[in-house]
Image (tube, rainbow, N blue to C red):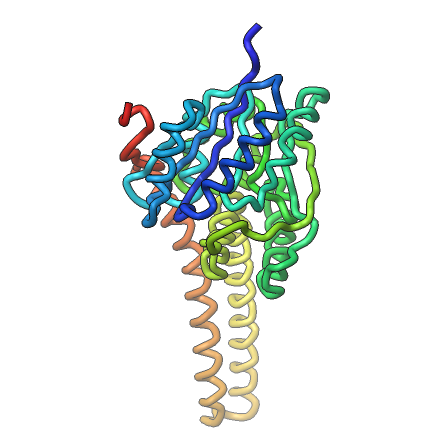
Length: 314
């Protein structure tokens, strides 16, 4: 009877320092899990360092190592999708190369998914030690907001590190939307998920590729992808200001009839004009975000473009 196979997907962007360390760690775990076979699928997201060269060397050294190299940087979401689409295992795990996703959890995850009725065993950080406090604060607020305004089930501190069944992976791959937010997609497809908690772990090497600004833009992507609440908010604001304007018109008419038409008050009028104009631009910006995403989806562009695979070198 053939062994079951676990595919380990590792999105990489400028990870030449951490990749060899990760490989040694994951190989050690694979040796301890003798009842299953492994494949290691590294996805080079247009790295500018020697990440691809490291992948080539590992592929020559170990037949279980596969890699996909993009023609340019398409982002981690595209890299994860490429891995999920090309993985052949009965179970599929997504992990980061910096070892912030501890490989030691894999045996526990596999045992839980085999001995229970879960379709996915996911991980979440219960602490953010080593992370800037302002970044941690906004991250927690994001999880609160998106869970209130959308149907996406996103747990605070959730990582992309998870082990999934083939059925769940196929469901995710079937969602070929260009603007992807995997944390929301994982929850949207449903399936029973068990959460494993662990303390935050620092990067083993290299520096993080996620600045505060990139995380902020990523959070906007998630909100727009899984909620239309911002459009509702824009409509409510518009109706509110329409009501205020109507009341002010009545006040001005009554005041003019009773006391005449004084010319004083133009500074406050200018402030009001600037304020209302700002609200209008804000609402137009919200609508523009949704229109831009719709525009990108209708183009039908590929989520990623492959420049090289391990099979090209054999």
